Image 1: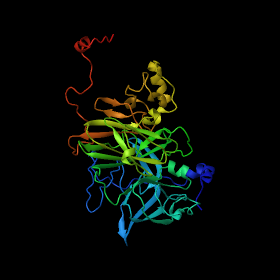
Image 2 (image 1 turned 90 degrees about the vertical axis):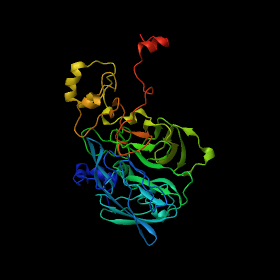
Image 3 (image 1 turned 180 degrees about the horizontal axis):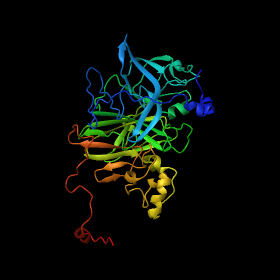
Image 4 (image 1 turned 180 degrees about the vertical axis):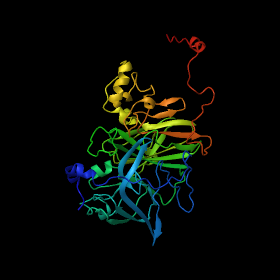
Length: 432
């Protein structure tokens, strides 16, 4: 039998000797680096395939009336953002695993090969499946031992946005990255089908600065908060042309936290949960959707406001990364040269500036190897002081290969800027 969590913990240093060296991701993105993701062509498929930013779809073949997929659980060397990598566990060389797509009524046959040093299983989160296919190790099946391949087979009885993840020693295995999205398209496509269909999987990790292996024993202080296993500025933007209908499927498999996901620049409706479609009479417009852990929420809106719009978790510590945790409060302090000298010996102190988080500390801070500053990256008007669970929705009059990498240029008269003396006098504002 494979090792349990208790056995792994008891091994201590011996667990490291299992050779968790990681595999480089093998699947290549279909879009060139920096290019805006194009809506996949329908082709012979009865649906428009989902785009998983920073991710990929799991390929399948049709055999005897079944759609056949193959998942391989294995060690993966994963990049959370430039300069921050982890020795993780994933599927098919990816963290998170590739998105599975099929159609309501399909018979799916999913083979799972275990190349991990421990036993595992796969649970199909939210899907109606026979009890013996539910993937709970020890309850609905015996675990998949290292080197074994199991077969799961079931007919998809509903449509919507679901997830898959390990359900054997799950605290450890999910914390190491064993999860992915599972999208089931309706057999009959709705009249108002989206022009853009995106999938985002939220998660959280404990990865101490200077280390490379996530800590599955952490229960509260998660310091890497991700969308599709990436932190900003490593998150790919979501793009849409003016007037397009956009659907964003959001799943949350974080270990301990719910996430209120807020979208700037527009309002949306929550149209589905992992329990099914929400009747139109029960929907309302909002700008923030709470995605509980272990749940999915699907939102839709019409892209009617051009610009670069932030989309992020509104728990403020969830838009920070590693270096924002466990540091002293230096707000209002002028450490001057003492701070610079101390930072050479205690790098975490360089992560927060003396007046807050807007002094480009992310650019110049001295940080340990394989770490990332607590906040963001370069933007069109300076440093963007947000990181972690943050991305950008780019709405343009037209979409081309430059959209994803270029910043929005606000038309004259629509950009906030320094008020002139004449303007202040005109409106009776005394700034001093």
